[in-house]
Image (cartoon, rainbow, N blue to C red; front, side):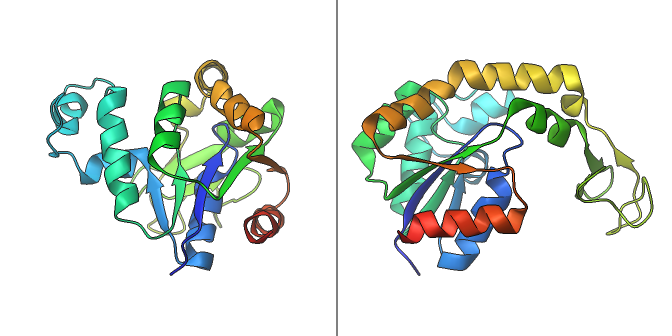
Length: 208
């Protein structure tokens, strides 16, 4: 196990999930995402209630609850890749008080490339496997290689929805990127190359 403490930032479609998995495998780290941490601790009692109460009601889990859950997950990890948190400035400031990060990486991808990536995604209706109309095509068009299920475009992958997701990201999460940039801890890595090229650049940053 390694004790690297890595924060991976980037817009939807930048490849954070793919690269986080590769980093965790390469260095023996825990991959901590907000969604996973909340699902694994749905019943954890906080002074605001349990995450499950908000999730079951279809409501956003409040920042103080998310903060407690993430800190509990970080405490259990010797080293980690944090992906999908912090999503806003308050969470970033809370994180700074709770842990020291070794590496903060921003995967930088132009918006038109993000739109192409996200609108081209196809998901298996049966098993949830992901494909892409350009970059990761199935052997037979419209059919999942894994289980033979039908490949569909999710509602949140249409162009209008994608552009709205990117707008929300810019509004809420770009200030987080600026926060780490002003702090002098942010390293930008282009997310435009192949997954192997991007990973090679990430590995250089982590090991520098």
